Amino acid sequence: MKLGIFVNTLTTRNEGLTTHDLAFSALNLGHEVFFFPVMQLSANKRNIIGRGKKLTLEGIRSREQMTRNLGSFETIQMDLSRLDVLLLRHKSGSYRIPENFHKSAREYAYFLQENGVFVANDPQFIPFFSTKLSTLHLPESILPEKQVISNDFEEVFSFCKDELNYEGVMKPIGGKGGEDIYFTEKRNLRNTLKSILKKGPVLVQNYIPNDGDKRIILLEGEPIAWYKRVANEGEFINNISAGGKPVAFDLTPRDQEIIKALKSILIKYKMYIVGIDILGNFLSEVNSEVPGGTVRADKLGNFQSREKIIRFLESKVGSL
Figure (spheres, rainbow, N blue to C red):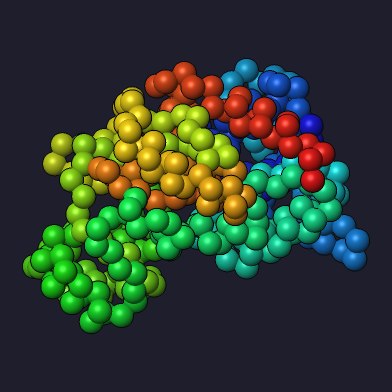
């Protein structure tokens, strides 16, 4: 299998990325793997061309070593129609890459999909599952009781005051990694809201008591790995990038209920590989652009999720 992966950049110090975890697993299973940064894609009248790196296991013994040596792999230029599978692992708003490069990458992926390359996730629908707006697709029963999305100051302020009694949380709809998440406390609300609205619409919802943020990796709507992110004492943001710690947990009946409610929707829109976040007893977020967590989950639970994902991709070769 020839596996291409669209990425933000070839320069990273993060040795725990799911993208690299999947690439290393695919290499170990005997596949050819290529990384193509979104800023190095082009097209002529007939072909979509990627300039990137061909990864190999030569001299490489671990995922971490592979990550450290990305720049030293052979630089190649390739007609991307030769790929069997394409993974979209680039995220809008990342690495200061203008949005047009991400948009173009999705459009290239669409044309490749039309010409027989299996693409995950479906480039037509990723934009609708890539922000906190994705919850609009979903059953109300699995969402927080009170929630609004708006960029109107007065509407959001009144919602925080009258509906939430200043006991809620707000965050930009395109936020990531626990950035710009604030309590709707009365004392600082006006200034905080003015600042956060400069970045676009915000999601505001009632505060959900919790003992951690559950990350569950779904493959075709079924759970294959999971772990919980727990905030440090005195903090309320659970994200690992914000200092949270990963711990093991067992899926509850409510977790299974939320997953079941999502499955048909994810399959309909060909969101093959996603990461969902559950806070308390409610769905917090659906991550479809760069769903992560395989490294932490597999370390805590020995789920072998990376191998399951690669085997799934193998099964899709030639299926279109």
